Figure (cartoon, rainbow, N blue to C red):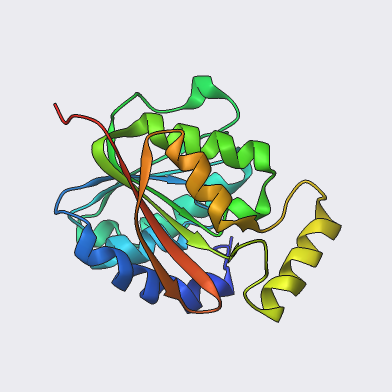
Length: 204
């Protein structure tokens, strides 16, 4: 069976890695929500095999993720793959069990309710001082940042009226209520943002 391929991952995996690499400490434990094809995990682990990467998604995606991650076993990469639906809290990882949560091109594909659940899952899973990194398109001050994003949002709404591009301000407000404080926002290729937030609280 051929590995699933998302062309967008091929285009943006290097800029995402260059954005995150200086921020991630050696040996960091990373939880990826909505890992999709698994291409981001495979690429980052090929560059940073010191990381421990936990890929999660719905059951239909797991075989493809396993195919991509098998390619990086030769470099000593450590990883785990498991089912996770963020709207089912019983599937969430143990509290304070990871240093990073990573989401790439996920929030605009899901409803606002599901996006809230993903953020809550991220916040609970992070240790104090841990960080969540989100890559994808966002509106700013209620406006599209490009015609491409407008067209994408129209396509998303036609596919699923509950989905759509979220406002950056909404993300920051929702995250603040979960003790996630904005750390940095960086513009990345294809009219997307890289957003990193830190879990507040005392480190044990």
